[in-house]
Length: 424
Image (cartoon, rainbow, N blue to C red; front, side, top):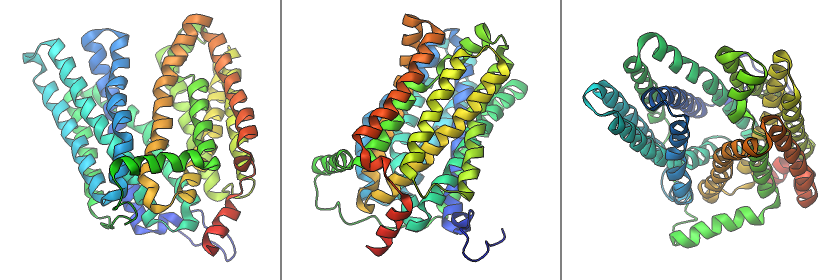
């Protein structure tokens, strides 16, 4: 990588840090494996049961332990060495992949119903691992990245996450389709182990000492109170939560692909990939032009653009137009993802990073799961197209409400926050 000219910001600055490169590479490989596994498990479960509801139960089997353990996991991420938590969580993911491999290898000798129950059990334990992994790695990033590079690290973290979100499922599906389920799970194991090896080379940094004298209950209350007492952090989290809760059309994409756009499963694959591709492009743009000034306005504007895209998608009967607005929705959504992540990193004291990340994961994780349920329920009551229009409209209302109730978020300038932190 060539260095930037004097006086210009370096879009690759955080990638020049060896510790960050190790962490983000390990995260990419692990997330790639998780995305592969989600597709493989989905196909496997559906082949066994033939019941679409069983697919929803896969997500529920992971979401319940994740959400139930999140706050406690944040406490541990603030009290103990975060690298150790990351490694142990990754080991659970590896053991889960190995278990799924062995279950599939011996599936002919096991009753179908038992196979399904075993798979759900494995997913339950990986949900626990996810609950511990997320706050630990979020806190660890802040330990290895200088404060002035937080916006840059949020941008590149988003780039790698979305690349894995696009390529992981595709790879899992292709291996499953051409080689079978055993090689597919073997690929998941290989990618997970590779991520674990990279994590091993990260420094084993000590935790902050600020939490050691508090009881676990008092510590959890302190973390939750901090989030709800900070208008900027709470506003950013709430904005993202309600935008995803009401504005997500992903759960209904099969209906649009099959009954409205008439493009079948191949078109569905493109529709599913379009938002992630848009997010990757926007991440690269933000790496070169980070939203340091008028940040709050960019955040609210990004969510507004997302809501408008959802409404246009609902009204579209053209596959090309639908594909385009989904691509744009991913671009707009990524603006809020990068800014929210940066806000949480900048405004959170190091001794609270795990607990704040856990609260954030509850906001985001619950909105994804409940959002899918809301989309299905609204479609059942109002019809598919009106329900998506309703969701996009509620997203726009959320932007207006947030702007009024959180004026500090609307006026936010990250450049001023960075200067204040450096001078403080």
